Image 1 (cartoon, one colour):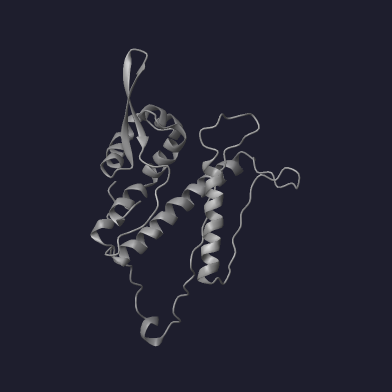
Image 2 (cartoon, rainbow, N blue to C red):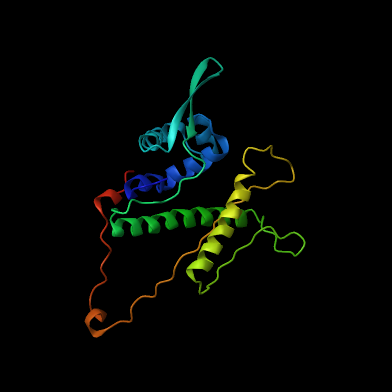
Amino acid sequence: MIQSPEQWSVITSPVRFEIIEAMRDLAPCGIKAIAQRLGVRPDTLYRHMELLQQFEFVVPAGFRKVSRATEQLFDLTADDFNISFDSDAEPAAANEMMCQTANVFLKRVMKVVQRTAAARAFDTTPEGKNANILCDYAHLTPAEFRQLSGLLRKVKEMLDGTRGRPTTSDMALYNVLLTAIPVVNAPAPTEENENTPEQKPLMAPAMRRRD
């Protein structure tokens, strides 16, 4: 459980987020395997792995022989990392962290969509449809939101149940993004704020990027 914006800011780096995503499929694994999955040089990942260890997302998981060399293995400390900030966390920092998280997730999905579209791999026919995109609004009571959250957790449990099983020829790798976000409308402009330059939200010191 992530209890501070500072800790969560480590994982919202795009590179470290992709490391975590790769390790969900590969771990326990070495840095070389992660680099191959991401298409980067292994030496570009060492600093990121050190930070992930420092903030307890990743732990050493022994060694293994690779030809004549010995390779350090790493594993994740949990299958999932959920936000649950301490009650004394700065509200501005916590809200900014939600923005950073959404930004990383949306960029990741957009990258996947662009690559799939470039490969002409989307099938929109009734018989072979292989993608679903849903965006909707709904007025929900707190009880209904809890019900919706329960349904999202069931989807997550289904996805978790597929991890570690052998890959077969009829399988495809999917990127799934689930959101349920409260909508707060911006206040109507007034004479006082119409001519006031837009102010950027202040970011708490703990929110400074570490990369």
